[in-house]
Length: 198
Image (cartoon, rainbow, N blue to C red):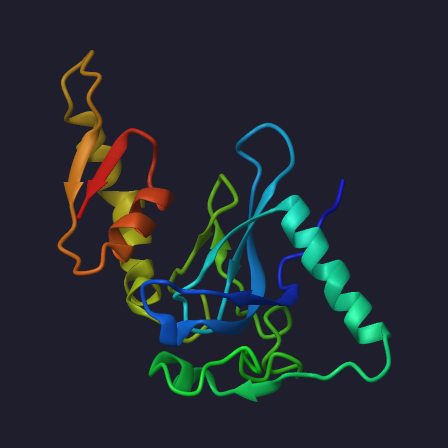
């Protein structure tokens, strides 16, 4: 069974049909591991802008890392020009020829593992941005992450207990969010007996 340590970096080309100017090459970092379902685990990876954070299957990640190792071992392989992640947030200069990479990820200070930038994992292996996470927030989901984590631990259990005994319907939460990304992230992070609407 293939196991990738948290903090592993790899590059992936991404195509965005909603905002084509965001399409390009991004550097991902493995931050979470989901073993809640039988079979091979899934790996959650973040990229510098937070727009394309997603789950990768074990096979996808193994193929991506094998391709990266092969490219590094073959002499003369062209390394893509680096694009500042702040320019990527503004959707400036993103292309297949440039890679949006984590700032200083190769140095000891910027390394996810050595600098303590990796998020906390919940009981299912999913990443949470808490107050102890030293990573600078990349987007609104990272910014409200500590608040959501506190809310889930302190207030969600009491809301679930207020449901009538034998009531099968899940707790419903309305999230006022323009794009629906926050609602989708919240649904992934909360328990199965909670439905999130945007």
